[in-house]
Amino acid sequence: MINIKSNIDEVIKQISIAKKEQIPYAISLAVNETAQDIATEVTEQMPRFIDRPTPFTLKAYLSASGKWKGKRANKRDLTAIIQAGEIQAEYLAFQV
Image 1 (tube, rainbow, N blue to C red):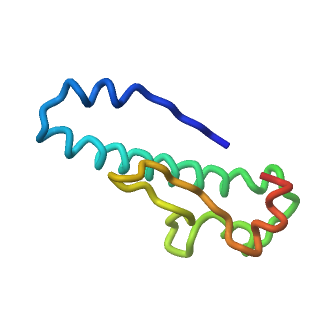
Image 2: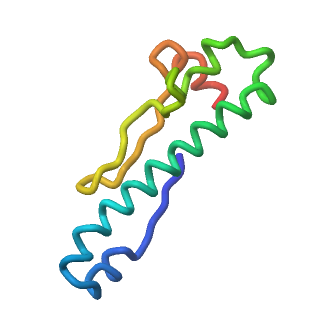
């Protein structure tokens, strides 16, 4: 599990009200982009650690359109969760 902490609350107190509304949105975009990068990198690294992964296994963390699977962050909840597909999660839990 990756856990990232920041002092964003202290910084937000010093910024004007108009900008305060945009900061959580900007952070949610950054969190989602980071989650996308992680899911893409995990998918690209699978062949190094899993012997001949099937296309089904390689699609565990990314959808057909290339978007990551899981919960996306929004301005009210700045948490993103990357999840494997239900079936893949059963056996990838031991690999990833």
